[in-house]
Length: 367
Image 1 (cartoon, helix red, strand yellow):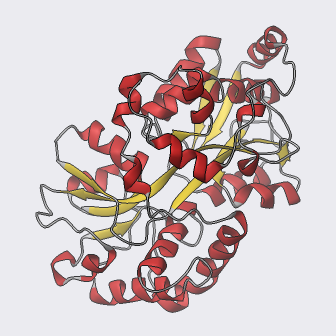
Image 2 (cartoon, one colour):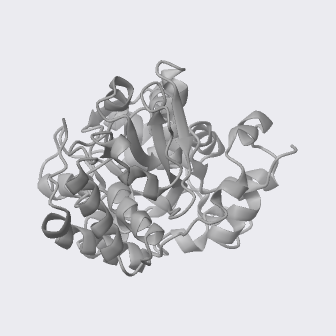
């Protein structure tokens, strides 16, 4: 395998890895039998084009014969947490078994007693920096925020945040979530702040930036999704690079999509997995986690351009297909990336939620 420049980045961001020895002995036969007896797994907020979750869901269901019930595919991290809270006493189809949320939501959910601890068999190869020591949550993949541009409509592709304020982009830009509740969207505000003289602890410049964009009419008050980008309703958005790259592949030139990591204000972030403390199908949930954190599951995320959390361990053992490693953006694209700490993300999410309406005044909604 010739191309592993990304390894240096992973090592820098995630720290040193454990040896890969199992953290516990899992009786997989018993777990599979118990999960199959339950017969179903309920997931939430997993769009099929988000880090290749479509293939992940299909492969898991086919491998174990377990039906997957999918809730609110385009939901936010906050909506996932609220779904657990709203269904504490409900064992029906609206109660999620597992969640995939932004880093800051894990510790908050633990404090509220919403999560069930479980350490997967590959626990030791997950960096300590991105997992709860007791197994309540653990990092799964990370990426950087990037511009996604429909170039059939936008001929002059923006390269940096300052470009998006230009009159030529009036009515052309939309966020990929409601910044008051979406992890991806409030980190977008943080990125704009970095690009405009702010810091990870000072989001006022980012909020002021979006206030200017809104006043200029450049900000469309819709949550951008693949369909609105493709139709031209929201031809420019910013989202995780793995989603933008997957959309580019899915649309296959109809329309043409260009993905740009901005010249300044580059923010990267880790998402995490967890099992609901009220999961109606706890064994299916545990089996899902075993699948996600197996080499097979991690490779499926890699196919969706996500940087899986066990990348270094797999690379060390030579089990990453060379053609997948070659499709990753070069490490140089992430050279200026800032990875906000857990504490910084929590503070940023609170700051945006409390100040978005009074400073920006744009009510970002689903179509």
